[in-house]
Amino acid sequence: MKTTLTAIIGLLFGCHTAFAQIDTITRDKGLRQFFGIRSIGSIVSITEEYKTGYVTALLFKDGKFVQQLGDEQIVYSYGVTPLSIGKSALGTAPASVQAEFIWGRRGDSSGYIIRAACGNAGRSVDFTPLDGLSSINLTELDFNYPNERKTFDGFLVLGTAYEIVRKPNSEEISDMINASHQAIILLFQQFKTDKEAEIFIESVKKKYKNS
Image 1: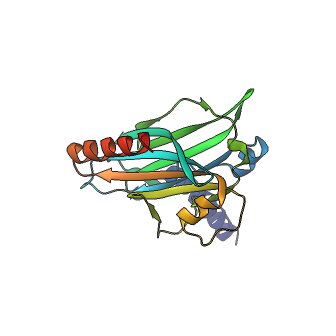
Image 2 (image 1 turned 120 degrees about the vertical axis):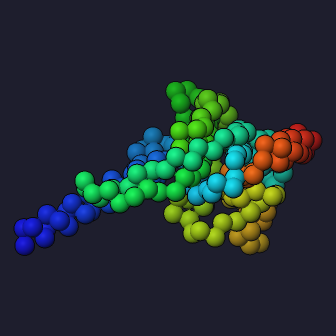
Image 3 (image 1 turned 90 degrees about the vertical axis):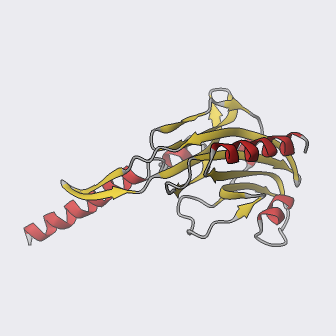
């Protein structure tokens, strides 16, 4: 009985360790809530046919695009994450892109950061002051969101957050944006060649610059 109980405890704590190794941006929700920090984001498994990825966040106000909140290109690193339960090696986890948009207060300022990475490749942008984000409190596409992801404007959607002011016509992202005073959409796209990435990113910058 003691041996069985020890094995169960080891399995539980071992699984927790394995999960922590895989999901390097899993958030401590209680701690973030205590400090008034909110975030949206996700993890996307990748395959070796793709070479680079691109992450950006868009801000909308009263149904209209306002600005890009960050603009990051990621060069993929195809290292794998070791998995284990206790001292037993189980193999490796596939490479993945991890992206997160975080907003809240730092000192006397409100603002945000974006973290985008693939293994050890990637970086977090500096804290950018921006007032008014604290009222955005309805988040979707959390880390526990199903595998069937939504798309928006040619991107894969990794997270959305809204300040709803009226009943939306549907749960479609465009309707949610139109029903919100403010909305943040975290987006991702990946590319097989550098040229493909260059063309897409340039078109995105021109589009949103002229909006």
